[in-house]
Image 1: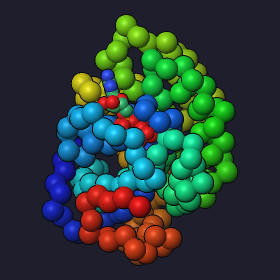
Image 2 (image 1 turned 90 degrees about the vertical axis):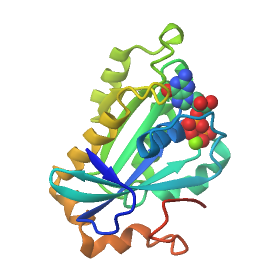
Image 3 (image 1 turned 120 degrees about the vertical axis):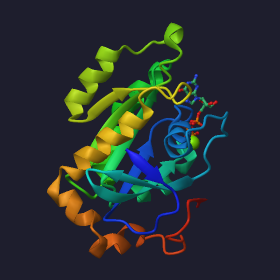
Length: 209
Ligand SMILES: Nc1nc2c(ncn2[C@@H]2O[C@H](COP(=O)(O)OP(=O)(O)OP(=O)(O)O)[C@@H](O)[C@H]2O)c(=O)[nH]1
Ligand SMILES: [Mg+2]
């Protein structure tokens, strides 16, 4: 997957959303994917987003990736960002079981309630596999839950970068393979993606609301 940050031309615009409990590493995964960096980040306040341009399947793609706060006090705000997402990444921490059980208790329910796109591709991600000694959720448990929900699945580490690029790549390839999502992401309807948030600049590389 080739990428560059200065491009403005693109064939498709895809909206991706990251959800999951606070501290599971959503912002860290996004930082790793967009700028190949790892830092000790503060909890996200409200919603953040980043834009990344990639070349995949011979197409130029503009990815608008929304990174929501996992803290419960932001839940009402973040629920509005599910609208129009073509891909949703649900993250848990393999060393904290409650972040895994909350997938069915909280996050899958949020997706059912707020996602407007029936064909939206969902990816389940078990993060922090670098902390193998502290692992409490097995890979099989993750795979079984993903199968139950009809999600893609991967385990990765934002710290060591293992599987992070592949995670996003697999999700995007699946979106590219879904005609209804491809149609939505085509240039003709790109404005719809930002329709509900008119104050955000289309040319920003990141921002916060
Ligand atoms: N060891 C390890 N630590 C990680 C990994 N990913 C994130 N962390 C750490 O986990 C903490 C939380 O990471 P964040 O990316 O801020 O988590 P978040 O899901 O965005 O949290 P909220 O914004 O509150 O929803 C930070 O201290 C990160 O450095 C990882 O793969 N391995
Ligand atoms: Mg965050």
